[in-house]
Image (cartoon, rainbow, N blue to C red; front, side):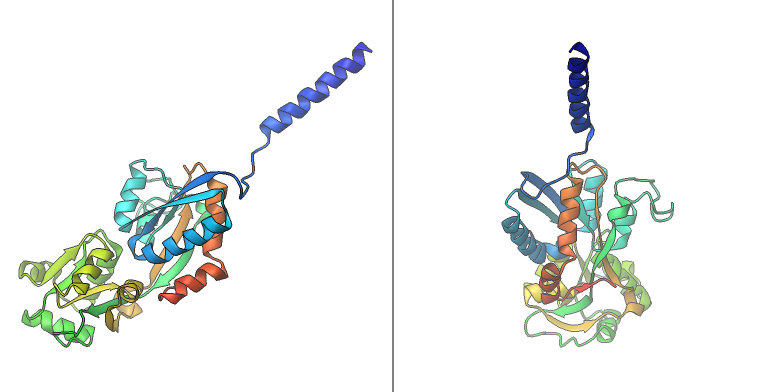
Length: 275
């Protein structure tokens, strides 16, 4: 009798220990708050998609932090809570990814859950003008001539902003000196793509370079689109962060963003699925 009681106690203890040791799988009905850091150019689309996702998953609340990818990268590096990061360029994601070499990740930062990283979207870099196009600008070629003659006021992103970095590549492609143009008062800057979009929308500049998706959302006229040769591909990588408190839930939302429903929303404003 005593032996059977001991065996029963050992069996019960074994079951308890097994339950304690087993990892808890995330369930869609659990109360979970996800924090998503995303490039400012995704504001409209990601807000729509997170609302759809929350409706379908009542236990999930998604808080989005939209800003330039450089600013978001710095916030993550400095310890801000972030479950999922979507950058407007690989550069900022690479700087957080320990799987990248020292050239791409000079500080050896290790924030990216590498197995989760994907290229989510592709965008286009667009030359946009205010309503009525007062300067009658029709192409990047024409913009270059106006910059050379000093007869245009042009808006672009700062150098730490992906859209600004793409614009710098375009200027370099045309062998223009950005510093000289800025000193001549021909360039004004925005701290993210939304600021550049607003300057063009309000006609405080003659033209600006933004993403095609921002032009669509703001109702701006696109007069030209940069080619791959001019500035490369505009790829948006996404990854779950290693320090996320909700890795499985963050991965589930990222999986949703790659699905047909989400891609239909993305494509509706000019994004395309990254090849």
